[in-house]
Image (cartoon, rainbow, N blue to C red; front, side, top):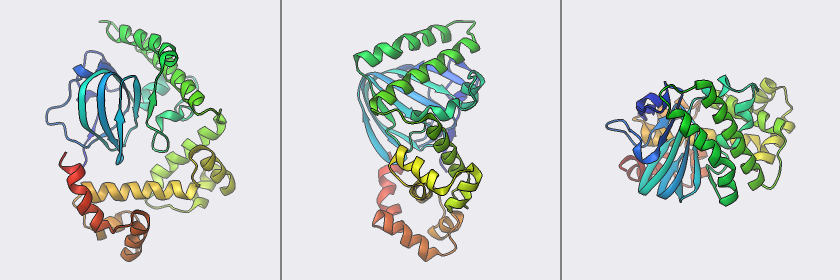
Length: 292
């Protein structure tokens, strides 16, 4: 099975329990026998200031260079397959910690860059954007380094930092997406995450969100370029790949686990998407990811 790590699995004096940590990347105290790939129960932002790294997130490989922010969300499959002279920072925090210090109950939903399963999971910084966020980072570094650190100050500085990053992301996209649409999309994504194994009908999500199917499709296409039905199918496909690669279940059991009553239909749908059968996929991908 794929292990899921918590913040406390990475011991640091610059942490607040299992809720927050800011550590130098090169000094990160990783668990003994750390397994790759793995998942996190927390959000993570990596800021590389030197060196390079190759990250794989949900089977998408990304090469990270200096002055790049890299985002990892809870539950995403994470594999760091290569690092060279890496220095920088890693900021980890839980959803609860962020919301505890945000007056806006939709704060997490409005930070669209944290939900990187549908957008680029990294942001390249330039001189002006570094000047935009580095002062806040240094304030955080100073506070977490105190013997008597203030959880409230750290929480509010984190919230300010994330919102500045969001402002940069919005400028990079060259368009200001309607905040209410972003909130609704992320609510839709959360519902999909909770129900994708049993619910693939857009009507189900439409009823839950009190939105028409047309409106949900409109929101999804505006933000991701894909229809709502594709978002649901992509999540199911991702889980199929995870189970094929990282479980001992046979393909029939995987089919049943994901709500398919017809094994042949399950195989046909997978081949239609990936151009190979589930068995062929498992064989071809095992060595690439399992033995890193």
